[in-house]
Length: 100
Image (cartoon, rainbow, N blue to C red; front, top):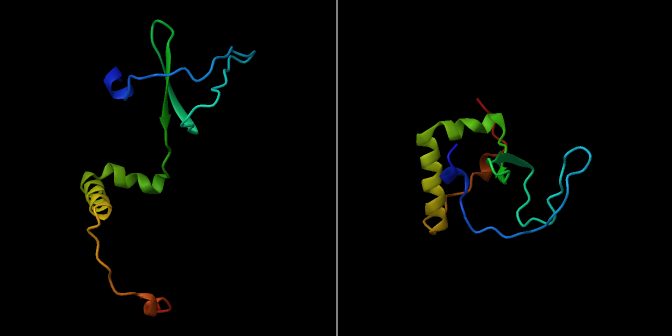
């Protein structure tokens, strides 16, 4: 993976310092945006980048594999953010209807 796709912001600040423990672990300290999962990258100089990751359920992965559907969802999100929505009639009266 190339550096441009990993480093999204070149402005780094020191948030903590630490030492490896006996199991070669190091605490992250109080980082601003903690995540549950990270990809770890190391360069020849020994510098390390932790890239926060998210995990999505397998049943939702189809959306990210279907460009047309994903583009449609993103377009709808932009429209909603811009206030381009309309109120539709309530379907509450059908809540107890039998499914066919």
